[in-house]
Image (tube, rainbow, N blue to C red; front, side):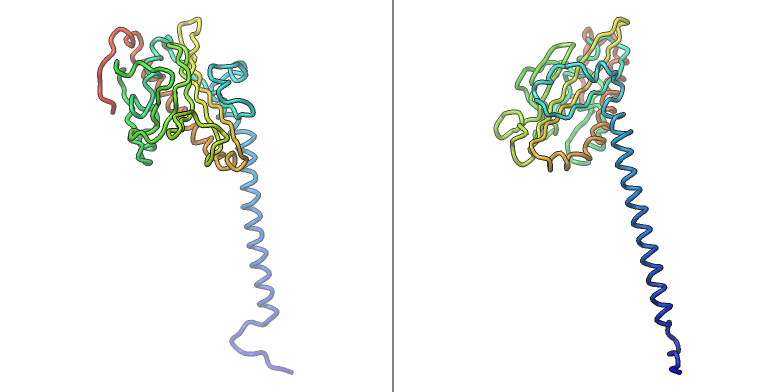
Length: 255
């Protein structure tokens, strides 16, 4: 008989250990894949339908709103809503002064400023910021690095903007490289019989290429987080200043 080498693992035992390792790794990968798939399904079936219509009724989700035609079909559409205990004329001053160069976005300034956007949301209505005209640029960054062109203004009713191409001085089209996407943002105020305001924010996005749609997919939930904070920020400010918006505006520094 051939003697077994001392101090080593028998070949059969080594192969058995290797098989166990492979099986364990395969099981781990399978669990991770199943968890990932379940997460994707859960997001698409539960989370995304919830956040894409947060606060909005079926009627509001399906109703036409100002600016819909600016991003034609096919387009992805998101409609969110919140009730504000103030009439539209007390909400409008906060909407019209949206912009990095004006009152900010009433959202998570600290998060936006991680990207050096220079945004500082104000808690005051500033008279100099109460006018917008079609063609104006609503800045996304304080340094003027990008933003949205004003497409429609209906005082106390609606403000509609569309992503700007600063090189052409035109709204971005889904056919334009390198992004191949276009985006319309509508802020709509609906007066209610009890004197409150239903504040709706609609996003419409059109994609020129599937790769653009794929790359922008993760942005959806981030947009919801920032937009919900903005809507709540406008609600809090309008309710705190109710009855004072048009009669006694205050000049104040943003911050």
